[in-house]
Length: 317
Image (cartoon, rainbow, N blue to C red; front, side, top):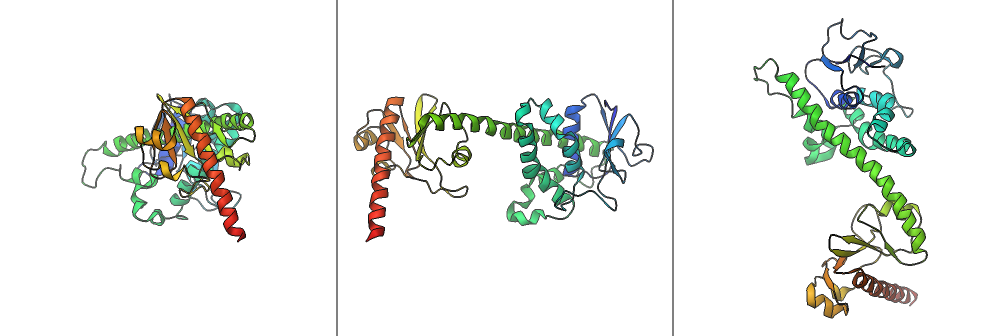
């Protein structure tokens, strides 16, 4: 299908049809967005996709509304908004158009649906209130999109349409960035898995660049790993691995006597020439060369293993 028109309702706009427009205009860039409630526009025809208006959900006829009785729901009973319906039927095509590898499309599609689309669906249907975000409620994506509506006394007859297209452009940036991040996480997972295999029983994981690594480490069950090494600009970094998804507790801290030191002070404390910096929180350190960071990593592992022995001995007393 190559529609001439993408039809949604006129009047005030919300996150669901704005985000639906992001998906559809990526797939059908030559189609014109028509905002109308006129019967001649919201009646299915071969030249259009209708969404968030029309009182029906029929994918074969290209109409995707969710306001009618008997509106569509997910398998678990959660309601769809127009965004959820458009993502369900056009999301995989959108990901292909966004150059997501075919092997990753299903996983990225599901991840984006659960983390990005579903909350919009729930808010739009009143199943989730932005107020649950507390003081950040106005900064949720649906809330921010609402702020783009023209003010009540704007007399410009084109104000609403202009604001709608502005909202679509802003929302597009968020969708593209979120999809790119999801796809990047899968690429990172493959690189981290390869590095874990290379590391074997070693306790320090060396990666070729900075990247998300904890999910892959957890997925691989690599509980023996304590630290991660990566190059960064002209320096090399040594960092810890968080124990949990939330919070900052590390599997192991860098040596206490390094905390907050820089330059020659850190070199003297660690005995490593080229040591540059250690955060006072003992979760990251830097060195000038790979050899220096490897030496620091070796010392950090020894310190952590000694701490483990001390802790176990104390528990046995």
